[in-house]
Every structure is written in C-alpha cells, then in structure tokens.
Length: 617
Image (tube, rainbow, N blue to C red; front, side, top):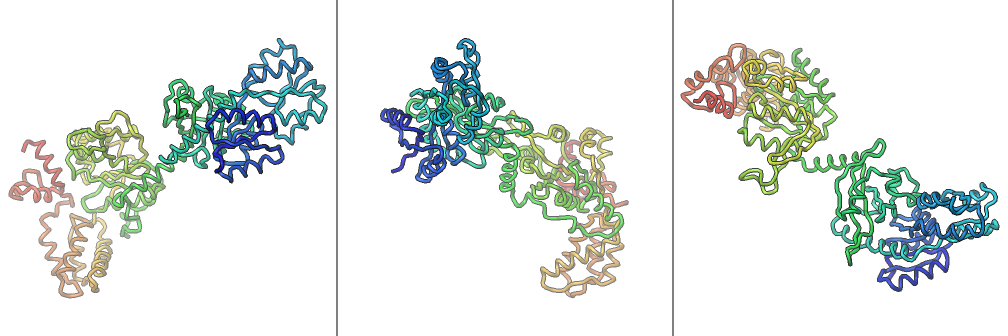
C-alpha cells in the first residue's frame, strides 16, 4: 500500500536523517530521492501513486509546489540554524553570500557587525538561475545555503557551508502532514472545502504565524509567487487576517471574518490545527473567498429557495392599451425599470397596478431575481409584521421552532411589491420607513439586523396626500415611497382600450371553452356606455360571465346590459368608489353586512374592520 505522505530528499545524508526520525514516528510516510532535474517528474509520480501530502527541504519544496496540486510542506529553518552556519562560515572568510531565508535573516542582519562579516543576500531563485545570481557578485569568500546550492557553488570554486536542519523541524513537518490528513478526513465527512480546492484560497501557518502551505488561488489573491510564499510571515503578506493571532493564542476557531486587501474584500475562516492524540496546536488553517464570489453563491442559493409564487409572470408585453394616457404610463414605467428607486403606483381598484409592478421588475436588472408581492390589507398587523420581517425561534407563542425568513429576506436582490400600502397602521409605517432608510431588517426577536438589497414598489388606491393631511399616513414615509410616481388611468379615461381588452379576454375564454365567441356591435356599444368602476378586473369578470351563459357564439347586448344594471349602483361620481358613501351609509345600505359594506366602499374587509375599530363601532 502506498504511503499517504512522501518526503522528497535531495541527497543521501538528508534521506538518512529523515529515515532515522521516521523510525520513531507512526506516520505513514516514505522517503524518496530526487535531483533538481527530475524533481517535477518525481513529485507528479508520487501524487499519481496516491501521496496526499508532500514534504521537502527549502527550495525543493518551493519547486514541488509548482508541480502538484496537493499540499507541500516545507521543512522550516530557524534563525538559530542560519546563525550557526554563518558562525562556521565566518571562520572561512568575511564576504559571505546566502541565498534566500529573508524571513530569518531579518534577525541575523542585526548582528552581522558583531561577526565582522560582509553579508551578501541573494534572492531565492530556481536552480537554473543560481549561476546567473552568483556571477552578479564578486569576490565571495564562502557561500551559505542548502545541498543543491552548495553543489552548484563548488562548480565555481566557492567554498560552502551547509545550513543544517534541526531534527525538531523535520518532526514538526511530519506531524503537520499527519494533522492535515486527519483534518482532511474530517472535512471529507462534513463537506468542508479542501486545501487544494480551486474555489477556496487556503494557507496554513505554524504556531509562530509563518506560512507553511499555500494553494495556487491564495498565491493569486495575495500576489505572491509560490516559490517565495513560504519565505514570509503571515503578518508580512496579509496582516488584515488578524484573527490568525487570536486562534494561536486561544486555540478557538474564528469564522466569517472580513478582511480588505487592497481593492478586494474577503470572507475568511481561521481554524486551529490540533494534533488528535494530545490536542497540541500545530498551526492554523485559513480558508478565504472573494466576497463577490460569496455573494454570487448567496444569490444562487436564494434563487433555488425562491418559490414559484415569488416570481414575476407579467411583462409590459402583457399590458394591453393603445390610448394616449396608457401609452404614456407604459413609457414612464419602462423608464423607471432602468433604476432602483422606490416606485409609488396609484390607481383605482382593478386598473392593473400589480401587472405594472411585475412589468417594471421584468424589465429591470433584477429580472432573474425574486419578485415578492404582498397585499398589506389582507393580513392583520401582527401577522403582516411576522410575514414581512420573519422571526427567530421562540420569538412568540406559536412561532415555528426553527424560526422563519420574512418576505423582505425572500426578496433579497429582487423586488418586493407592497400593495394597498395605504392600509398599514402607523406602527407598521414606522417599521417600513426604517427599512427604506437603513436597507436592513431585523427579525422579530432578533438582536442583529440583516442587510438586504431590494427594490421596493408600492401601490395604493387611496389618496395618500389627503391621508397625510389627516394624520393617518406619515409624511416622511410618503416622501420616501413617492420617489418615482406612476398613475395608472382608470378604464373610463381610456375608452379606446375597452373593446381591445374585452376582445382579448373573450379570445382567452373561447380558447379554454373550445368554441369561437365574439361580441356583437351592439354589445360593444353597451360596454362603451358604462363607467367600469372596477376597471379591468370588472371588465374581465363580465366577459367570463357572459361567455358562460351565452347560448350563441355571438354575444348580444342584452347579457352585457344585464350585468351593467346589476352593478350600476356601485358606480360613483367621477369613478371614485370612496367619494359616494360614508362608512355609516355603507353599513346602512348593506343592512350591516360587512362584506357588502366593504364592497360599497371599495376597500378590503380587513380595512373595514380597522376603520370600525378606530371609530369604536
């Protein structure tokens, strides 16, 4: 069975040292030898045979990381190791060159004067570029470096001193590889993203905050060459990930943290890597994503969770009308669809306010997002609040055990349509005003707000200006919702569209009934003589009724006239249902029947009950 961990060594001395340490360790690790020329091929071969983590010294680790997609752990060096090598080199000469190790050298440079040496730092480069770097400097007495750097230096006749890796650092690398495999096993069971993921950027640091591993996406985000990444402390490249230090000190995970790196914002999770057998802290695993990617995922999730009821059905193409006033309303609505400002749609009952709202949504940039419609008059205030804002578990008696998302949350990134806005109570008006001001909502029983990105469209058949004047509708809310005003003309003001609409409705009915129906010219004339106080909805209801009871395929005027006579009492001066009767008159005319009284007033039954309550009736 192939080992899960492969240690790639550059020479027999290093391989023997690792083998001696492995005899004391239970790690499932094998050691292989490779020169620099064959290193990439050997690395890929080990992964193909099943190695899940590779370990190597210094530059070897950096080269291997460019060849494979599995984590590669570099056996780290401490400042003391470099210091020991420099002390030995100072006995051979005073002008000493050293490749790499910038992170540990920042401490060594402070004491070079005490050593009476001239220290020349050379950048970390791939093996083929080492001769070029050596040719840049003159009169080097001795070179300090690793095994393969020493071999190349000898070709130039430069004495070398090897930096010897401590056994403790080899043990730490092997232990970290084991911890990584244990963590990977746990993650594979829970579906957590892996180090080699192409979706998540990931880095691993040790207990001192030094970078040990970094995947390719992380190197792209942090703008680091993977060859040099492990030469840095995490504080050098991304100090914004400040919770890493907290994880090291507390051994607690910190999830859903925000960090800004230059012009990008990231969501990151920092979790401790603990040795299973004794709980020793090995390091910290950091996984992060561009916030834009997270938000795209959120949109996809919300779209999946959105029900069919939360989708717009109608577009502007479904709205029929050739009259000048209707053409102007459609032109204005189309212009409104190009921006995100709040729209107030006003019009009598039945003029098609929701169709216009859906049309605006379907023509907007939010067309593929949810469209949530709420009739504010159909629900009591307590239920309306929980429906709009949602609630946390245990918020009130009878609340769902798991809590509930509100309709504002369901509409996130899309549009919410609040119909009958004039019917909401002053208390709800205040809550809605806060949503418009703060662009966030708070679930019932929750302490923290939830940001939302929604376009709000409201509609009413009431005279909000008069309500503001009477003190029943907040002036500040009125000005907040009336950013873009849209008035839908009643049917009596667009007589040229009456026959167009009636024929369209009859065609739909005929198709469902499987017979060809048509209106006679006298029937059409009768329609034009009527005010249609219920507007398009009333016209559609009339067409459905006469199409069912007509014995002939041609519908004559008598059926239309009969419908008109039955409903003419609802017609009001100027077409306003509210201007004809007072509350008391409507109750008297209906004989106390509240449903009929609401119809006479042109309001919902819930609104009627609120009016009765305010008047103490």
